[in-house]
Amino acid sequence: MMMIHSNSRGRFLLACLCTLTLLVQTGCWSKDEIEDLGLYVGIALDVASKTEIEKKMDKLSTSNRKKDLITYTLQIIDKQSEGKDGESSGVVTAKPYINVSETGDSLFEMVRGFSARMERPVIGHHLKVIVINEMLSRKYSMNNLLSFMLRDNNIRPNSLIVMSSGMARDVFESKGSNIIPSFRVIEMIGNRYRTLKIIPPMSLIAVEGKMHAKSSYLLQNIVAADGEIEFSGAAVIKGKTQKFKGLLSEEELLGIMWLTGEGKGGLVKSYDPETKQVIAYEIKTLKSKIISQVKNGKISFHVNIQSDGRLIEEWLIDNEPLDHKFVTKAVHSSEKEVSRLVNRALHKIQKEYKTDVMGFGTKLSISHPKVWQKVKEDWDEEFSRIPITYSIKLAITDTGAKRKH
Image (tube, rainbow, N blue to C red; front, top):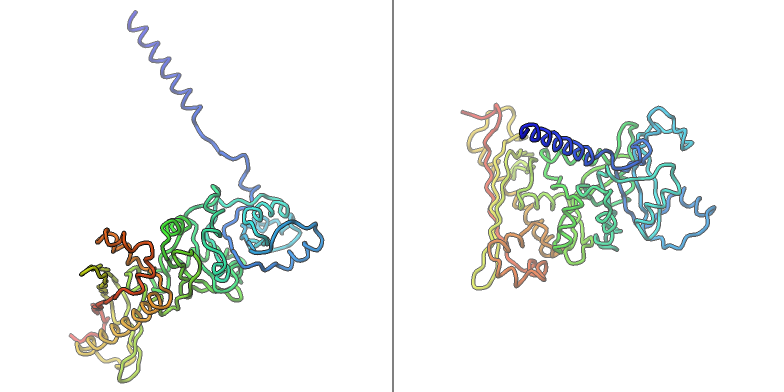
């Protein structure tokens, strides 16, 4: 009898467990089918600049109480282009995306405003990139521009943020009929191992951390023209104001990448001092170490920069084997060029912009926390007065088949 009772109780518990398991199973949390949603993959923010469609609609529609401060552009995956010839919108398009713009003073209001213009609600579950116009970032802080996006649960926190010297919405145009510009920007970031001109990506959540810490940082700058785009330099965001401070040129950005050691690949192009011919050093490895020092209450930094690479191009010797003397000459030429780039970068960020975008303050806070507590409130200003020295050591470990044995 005891065995029968025990088996019955076991079966009863198993049945209860199975029932509970079924109850807690989750299905699709939303009642909306993906085909019925307007999935936007890109956001562009510009100083108010109404499109021609907006101007025409404004003349016909009733007015709304708002100020024209910002133009908000969404890049939406156009499911209608997949064989339906744009029948729902009345416009035949071969492109797999559509760009729609709204102008106003509340980003959230503008997003909801698209619901009065489109047949499908827009949703940001698949947002890839946020492009912010340089002039807009001069006027409004990143706290203001990103506030709504950081609060919206539908927007992905790992979305990439970049700055644009020109109109941000121009980044979302392409010549080809099978290219989605937002995806193209993301894929271009993957080319970091080929060049030092592409900085480590800054996501929405990473920028939020910088904002909370009131730290200065860099955003990749992007330019667009005639359906083509290019990464060109970087935008400096000032820690205290969280506004655009200035732009780093490509050469100044290269200097920053050597100082931080965050580059994955690239080259150094220098010129032989005697013949003025090209010498190209390809980076195989790049390391940098920032050392903070405090002596008699005075802060200083030293940066050790090291790299191994290969001599990939030279216009000096006509198909002759390279000897040790020439390789040494190429190393010195490349080191001199790196030194020039580093000097340019340090002068720009320390003396002109007075912004620590490379993490010197972080190194100080780790090595000398008590000193950091005294200077952290006005760190960017303090940083502009601190002496920074550096050493550069390059090594050519490969010259190809032209090396003399």
